[in-house]
Length: 64
Image (cartoon, rainbow, N blue to C red; front, side):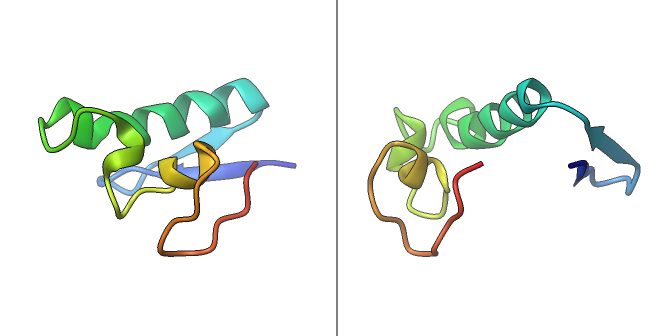
């Protein structure tokens, strides 16, 4: 099953493996940490990192 992650310049990146999907999720989840907004990814209330940490976030998420 292939998935795509759309960059700002609208060029798709094919998500061809679980490893690539995990890499992209880690990148997205760590953006608020890298920006200095939170110390840990799951502390960002708008992130699905909350769900991946085993907690319940604001939006229902299907864990991949």
